[in-house]
Amino acid sequence: MLLEAKHARAARPWKAGWLLLIAAAAAGCADSADRSGAAAAPAAAAAPAAGADGTADAVSPPQEGELLLASPPGGWIETGALATAALRMAEYGPAAEDEGTMERVTFEAQPGRPLPDPIDFVLGVSRDLAKRCKSFADTNIASGLENGYPTSVRLLICNEFEDGPQGQVVMAKAIQGKEQFYVITRRRLGPAATEDRPPLSAQAMAEWSAYFKGIRVCDTRDPEHPCPTGGNGVDS
Image 1 (cartoon, rainbow, N blue to C red):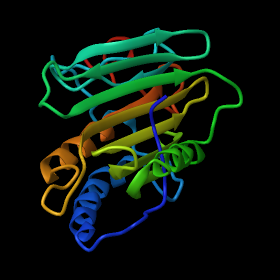
Image 2 (image 1 turned 180 degrees about the vertical axis):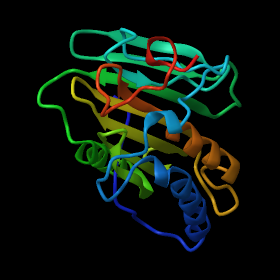
Image 3 (image 1 turned 180 degrees about the horizontal axis):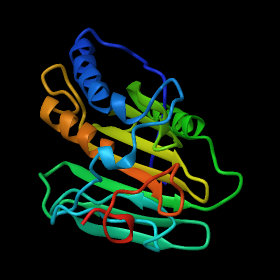
């Protein structure tokens, strides 16, 4: 499982600039989950994540009932998959990548009981990643209800790993459905961050924020968790 950790450590003077980027990402996602605990706006008010053809995909089959509405970024290809009674997972990456970097997005659905608390789950991921980093920062992007489901989104930045010259940026979104627990992770592994080379550009940060804002869970049977209108509850 991917996902990883909390707590800012070993702060450096130049990190302040990065925090501005993080704040911009938070502003982009803030209205996707109500931190006060009130229900989010109806699903129809926000477009689902789109694939290469611009349509939404339901990652969790079948195409009715409780659905995870999400797609990999346009042009990405499947790099791994797993389907067991305890876990369904699909991983995607770019068809071509720059040398020394790797970016992946992973969708996971777990039916176990009791379903985890999204905030506790992502904080646990954060703690695990922080242990491996020389310098680490964790930012809560949004935590609350989204389309009626408990949801937490966090941005995790490992500026440099303890055991190597690379760093990693992770954005993780955990959603507690009524039937399954969903984890969506996007991560970028690349050269360690420096004062002149932030872990993620402002443009990439904005793209990641918008991407996660479009991912959500709905239920075609339950008006408290509405799905977009269209075939099988998915926008056409």
